[in-house]
Image 1 (tube, helix red, strand yellow):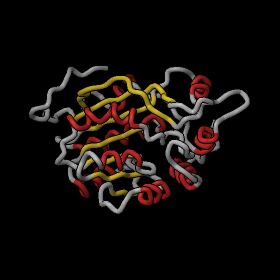
Image 2 (cartoon, one colour):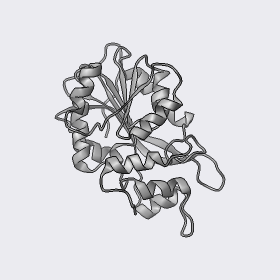
Image 3 (spheres, rainbow, N blue to C red):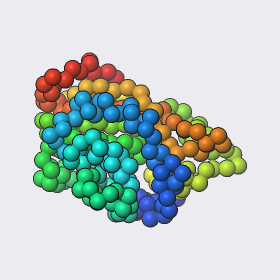
Image 4 (cartoon, rainbow, N blue to C red):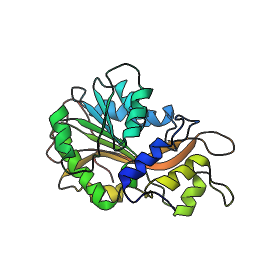
Length: 260
């Protein structure tokens, strides 16, 4: 399914080095920049992210969601394993100091401590990262997130959660027996094989002994249009809002019962 280098660092760098254009008519499969998708997230992050804490966008890519978060919160840092992705994010961002960007593999040992030392406790936003990580790396990232959020921050994640098989997924994204859209082909050739990440996977990676799930449920993840009609193209997804097991509920915030 993929000719990606075995080293995920090299795979992501190879991918981003080859990107010529971003946005909904660009080369990056997941960079639709959809206002409809962002609308699903806006209310919950505004309600549950403490605005006095910085926000870290893990796996920021070219910074589309970092810039959106920067319009909502006063201090945002986008981090990505690929130096080419961070360079593109910096180039696509105005002269503002918010968001800032840094090259970092958030799954590496010590990454949580490094970010905590730089920023203090923070909120974390993640879109489309866990579903491309192997289980050991998912666990390592969750461990680092626990360090980053401490007792005050929150983690919001949104991941693709397509329940069919790989062929069904490719067809959903616009592939046919005779044609694979270029953005999809580029991702298949370069990147780690994607999986699904829903409530079952979240329970494993974020066990109840260490995390409280404050809200979760279905969302629609939008990819760039690849169908003949050229209209919005959405993939079934899953979101979760989480806090450390010992974290207090923010004063004045009403939370529904955890689901999932």
